[in-house]
Length: 163
Image (tube, rainbow, N blue to C red; front, side, top):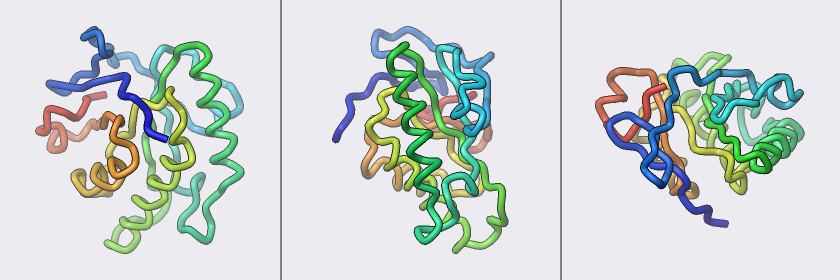
């Protein structure tokens, strides 16, 4: 299922397709488990932190129950024209290349599980991953995604949105 792009980015800023700037200066960042428990997520755009342990460390341990609940909650956002982007968080050792790849693969698996959620604008690029490799991995199946970062080096790419 290919989703149409609803947002665009330029000059490290997010825009809707009408060209209206989406201000993220007060964008709340909430934990995915709180979001799933409906404790938050009422803003127009919300950044949702998905910890590596939530999605699962490898394909043998992906947490499909959490990912299904997360997807259901993201689908609810669609009904109210609210949006979110995902902020991956490495809450486990991510120091060597094998673990960094496992982390990126886990976030890619999360993206696959929420692929039909039009409420998802995109993903933040984790500092633990090479930015271009991470974007390339997710863009294989999610060409509509916009990417976000707080990392000044990553933000040298003006297509990445500052948050």
